[in-house]
Amino acid sequence: MIVNTHSHIYDEAFDSDREQVFQRALEAGVTMLLLPNTDTRSIGPMMDFYEKHPDNVRVMMGLHPEEVKEDYKENLKIIENHIEGTPLVGIGEIGLDFYWDDTFKNQQFEVLAEQLHWAKDLGLPVSLHTRNAFKEMFKILEHEQDGRLAGVMHCFNGTADEAHAALTLGFHLGLGGVITYKNCGVKDFLADIPTDRIVLETDDPYLPPVPYRGQRNEPAYIVKTAEKVAEIYGLTTEEICKITSNNAMSLFKL
Image 1 (cartoon, rainbow, N blue to C red):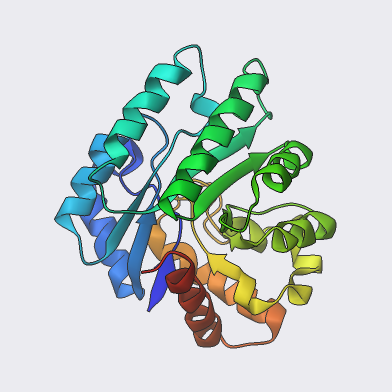
Image 2 (image 1 turned 120 degrees about the horizontal axis):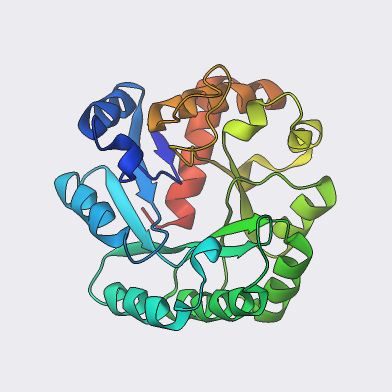
């Protein structure tokens, strides 16, 4: 059994073959998919897929930092209203992203803080997206951490110091296809990270692992990430799948 802690299988990239993609995931041993939404438009497709496959899918709810625009307050309220009555395992995908544009930088801080408060109040972990913003992210987390915050540094691709800062703050590292890339620096220190603090993910349809780079990513490809992580730790793929899935089940109370 493999728990994939971050999949966007509801995305329009899968509109033509979503069920076939899901079946390939099951055949690969991926028996649980955690789906974070990104904005108000993604709630419907995500919930539709969850309702079709309630035994193998769990959902999160949040406003992605790249979706923080002029109407962020309205969108945040819509998402907050959807939280009530929805069986969530986490708040996500939330975070900070200053890679393309930092026009709404202050608003991203505000939105992240509010959603961290939701997580603490509801007793839920968070799925944190951090891009070109580790310094700012850690400052906010240090301020907000009162013993109630937990979650995953989604698609972690930071330095060793940033990894250990995340661990100190009580977070797990989410490992996806990037770990299979030649220029990924995480490979150099991953073996020093305790195995009880890592989880596996795909972020499909984005960031496919080798040998699928340049193609659409899909949940079944998590096996390639597991193989690479196992190689780094000197463990079998089966051992890494078991360890990371147990970590995910504990963190997200699956």
